[in-house]
Image 1 (cartoon, rainbow, N blue to C red):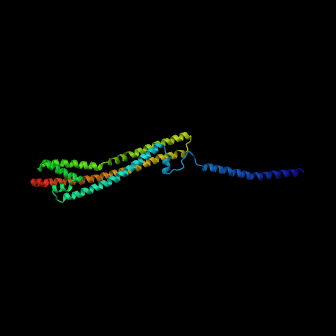
Image 2 (image 1 turned 90 degrees about the vertical axis):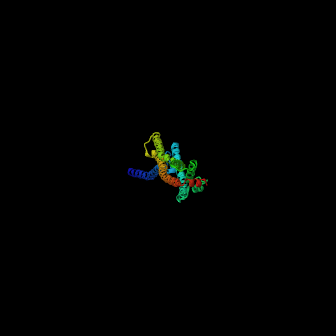
Image 3 (image 1 turned 180 degrees about the vertical axis):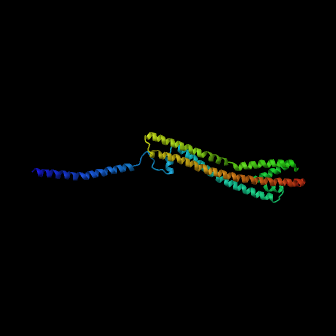
Length: 273
């Protein structure tokens, strides 16, 4: 009888263990699934979008202001490049045409008639030369040559300043944009460390987005500065060539004055026409 009861209790315990096994498996699976779901859940402290635009949107207001300013500086750089390229190309073409006319052996009076009413650089040189000759009563001597040379030098300087307007801004952008970007970088990294202190954690995932935003500011600064420096140097070379063309035109006008020294009466007659 006792042996039968023992077998019955053993069977009952085994059955209970078999019934408890699925429940334990289910509990284990549920726990694992919950942990996995929790690990995949987005951290509200971290931005979801780490693209350049996403980092800009999530950046601090100071960092945003720095990046907007640098983007505006880059827009100014390319606007100046386009405007000055067109202006210098037109101005250089006009000087070359006038220079061919002066080199063709025409007299000063003919050059004055050709440039009458024009406002280009060589026309200003020609009219300034004619004005000085008129004020000197068409007496060709060393004094007239010196006075004409002074007038031509002033006109050249004025025309060079005219085509150089706005180019200095490129030098300013090229020199200051990296430092402005560095300021944004320092500010962003400072905010990242403040975030670490407030979150009471040393997890790199907390500080990484802020550092990425700060480095993006440096990148924007370099994007604004590098083209500005390159374009500034290019325009400086083009303006130097333009100034050389004006120097050639001035030399041709001085040669005209020198050739007129042998026949001052003829010069008076031609200039008076």
